[in-house]
Length: 277
Length: 299
Image 1 (cartoon, each protein chain N blue to C red):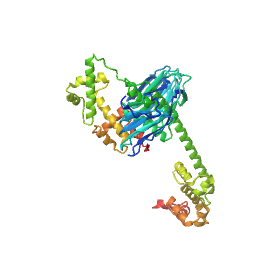
Image 2: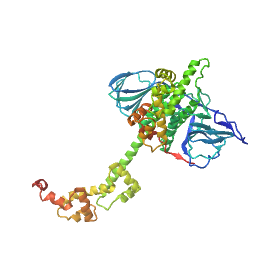
Image 3: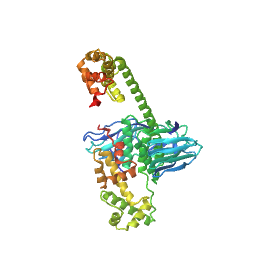
Image 4: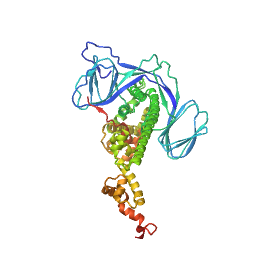
């Protein structure tokens, strides 16, 4: 047995997944804990004190304790959001602080969903200990904070570099639009009218991965989202819709990127604990 | 800030900061994290130093030599090796081994900091290996990412240690539950052995031990893979077989009553189901031809 002292500034209370019943409005209330809200589908309109927030999919909102908040508009039929309540313990001084923005657009929504799922399913099965709960919440806040981290600003005189970065964005946009089709570096290069070798080199220097890696990353992140939300969908079908016509190939790529096969991933992260009020 | 605008002023407006500052103390510094998947057998020396080492086997097994102490680490098991191990550590594995290695250094949490003590067992079978596997993947991913808070890394390490700690807790609880079930089933068996010739059933036994009959029934079935009723019948039939041969003078109905069967017809049915012959056949088979050729073998 080894003992570790772990910092314990966050006291996680509880969490859940809210699924819209198609009617009703978020209650107006004053609570004595913080609340983190993460919208995964639809949109949500909430006020806090005299501030109004319109949250879109993949956005988070941090509500403060002892300040009145509530719904501004009735729930739309398609809104889903995760929520978690927590408290912060007083700390005299610290070398490491995290600045969590009130509103953030999450860069890796699947990653944040995974953390919420872990939290909620452990909570429901009664195995969520205080330490894990606090670490999971800390990780959620890290993700929220990390999402708004500024990209390093490009010096305006370095035009060649700005052009390269625009090119990388174009590749990303093309992948986001076409990942369902059987595309590879050559299709991307053809569509953008560049030599495949040049495009590959530019992309790799900037992003640290190949274009094919980026295509797989996009496909697998879509597959992760489907596995979270469509609990009853056939796994091969999900693979097919993400651009993998071969189920075995889908499984291998999924395993390479997440460490788990799709079935394991689903049983680990499919959230079935839901509240509708 | 996008998505943030002023609404109608509120009477009890309070200042709402647009950023929340959360303080942490870093309990660990990560030295290395690696995923090792090997098709070949190998033997290598683990680096020494002041780092804690966490090994987690996904596939295959590892053999470790910690300065003379030998540890076998199987699939789904994790091992924590402290920094004070001075002796050289060697690690060998068979083909198709797939494991993770994490090295981290413990740092001091400031004295005035809210803290929690986490007790981590050194060697443990992970309750749900997929969970720990995915934490390692997240860690490797976070280390690769060029941006992003390094803070994520040690929260992940603490979560891994929590996973190890909770695995052993769950195992202890499961073991305790198994022990409870086993002792309950043994008590039922002992009661049946003493009372099989009386008119007993699950309700009587449950009343004797002050358990809910349905709970007792379920617990017994989990442990012995048969119902209490079946266990009683089995015991009675065992006794009946002996009595049928020992007490040739007594009739079948009398033997049935001796063994706890109130009804001879019921006795015959239960006996036939268990032995595939009637009590009468059983008796004649085992007495009249004693010493002679076995009738079934003659066919």
